[in-house]
Amino acid sequence: MKPSIALIINTYDQPDYLRRVLYALNGQASPPAEVLLADDGSDERTAEIFKDWATTQSGRCEHIWQAHDGFRRSRILNEAIARARAEYLVFLDGDTVPHPRFISDHQQLAGPDRFVQGHRALIGRRAARTFGEGNLRKERRQALLSGDVSGWKHAFRWPIPLRRTRRDLRGVRGCNLGIWLQHLLKVNGYNEEFTGWGREDSELALRLINNGVLRTDVRGWALCYHLWHPPLDRARVPANDQLLASAVAEGRRSCSVGLNQHK
Image (tube, rainbow, N blue to C red; front, side, top):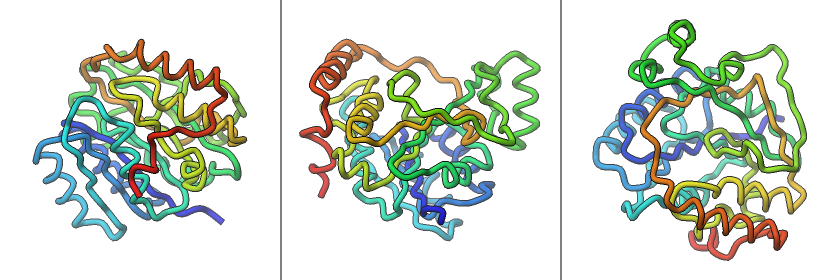
C-alpha cells in the first residue's frame, strides 16, 4: 500500500520561484495529502502567494513561519516535521520545480527501512527567468537547446528508475529527499546546531544510516528542476564541516537539539 505523503517545502524570500513550485503541484499525477511550507522568515509576499494557492487545494496546507535570524533551515524544517500528519515526508526546496510525477514516484519508491535520495537538473540563469511558468516539456526543450541546463540526465523521466543502495554521503541534498516520519522521530530530526548554509542534510543522512535506514539513490524518477539564484553565504561551511566530522567520528545516531525542541 502506498504511504500518505506530506510535502515539506522550505523557502526564504523567493516568492516568484515559490509561485512556480506551487503551480507545478497543481499538475501532480498524485497530489500529496498535505503541503507544509517551512518559511525561514520571508515577508508578506510569500504568505499571500501560499494563502491564495492553499484556498484552491482539497488537502491540508499549512504555512509555518519563523522570524529570520540568519540561515536556520534545520530549525524551520523541524517545526514542519513536528506538524506533519502523514506517514512519509518528501522534502523539496522552494526554488525547485517538481516534475508532474514527482510525488507519485516518491510514493512508489518508498521502501521499508530506507530513505530516498533523488536528484535534480540545474536550470541556468536565462532559462530560470520563465521556467515553471507554463508547459514543462516546452520549457525544458527550450532550456536544453539554449544550453541552459546542467545535469541534463536528470531532466528526463526514465521508464524504469535506476536504484542503488549507498552508505556514503556524497550527493546528499535536501532538495529532493523522501523519509519515513518514524525514522525522523527516531533520529530526532534535523540537528539545529547547524546554522548557515551547508552539511545539515548530510549529517541527518549519516544518523539515519547509523540507525540502519539505508539510502536508496534514485535516478530517472522523482525529478525536479532547480532554478538559478545567486550563491548563498557559505561562511559557516567550515564550522558545519567540523560538526559533520564529529558526527562521523562518533558514529552518531541522534542529536541533542532537534525535534525534541518542538513537541
